[in-house]
Length: 175
Image 1 (cartoon, one colour):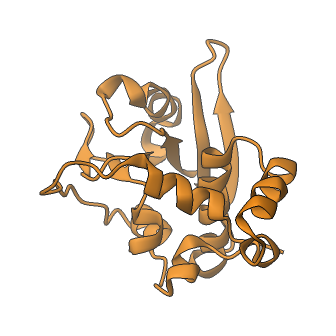
Image 2 (cartoon, one colour):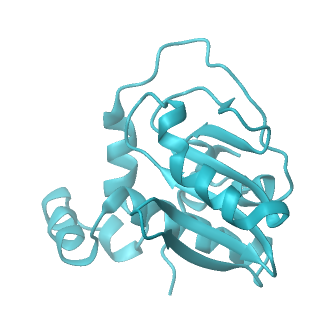
């Protein structure tokens, strides 16, 4: 059983994964300063398992302590795996770490086609944050289709490669 995605909870289609796979992610600079990370934290901690959502706040916290490690990364992986169910059930999901300990939180593959997803809890993103995506792109060569660095900020922008974008985590549930 997969928990409800944040998109399902918000009653929106949840097309982020389809946009990533289809190369439809575009830069978009926010007109306002980034929101406080508390709203993001509240969404992640709220979870999507119906039994946790229905519990009191104190009992939901206990439930999450028992079942969820590395909340933000786990949250993103769960959102994308669930979206794959209605986007492309043939997708495969992996984690990448090489001998130099350079890693990518989530690697999505369809045959040899490869996409990378990096997750950061910060409200800012820098080119250094995409080191893992750069390494993955180099390893995959022409099979690398694109990547995304999801972060707690509000703007979307390219990070030195037209195939790799920085996107607000909120795109997971508002696309």
